[in-house]
Image (cartoon, rainbow, N blue to C red):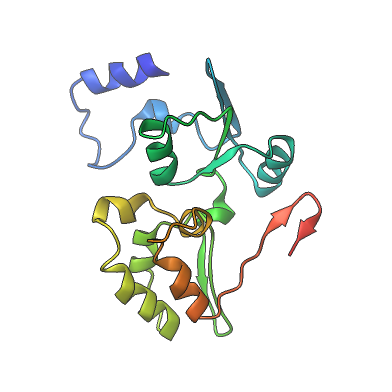
Length: 178
């Protein structure tokens, strides 16, 4: 894979539309994937059921969405994780929906996606206004809703906003959902 990416980057452009992935990466698809490293294993489940199963098998594994927190932990705090579980291939984690009764956001939805989501819901209007002041564009492009909640950082601006709006969380495990 690394060779394919380097080869692609070294070749002249084939006039692909700006911002598209290299063909080699697109061919990998969104199937479940496991990459074994020297000290840790990367899991990319393709469904919520696979995610729940992996988390039951590796309860200590870190879930990765935007990687803003784990990158700091590994680089500056020298933490190591034996298992990492990426959420990028689980469609349910990336969905945003708004109907007359509620606004729903998957845990891996980025803060930038929330800002761009068109909704007249007063809670969403308030979230969009608050997010203008949240981090930089680069952080908003990768930071996720669930990651912001899960890190419980004192600067996690989404937590008080969601509490004030009366948000509810749906949590899934092998024992069901609550």
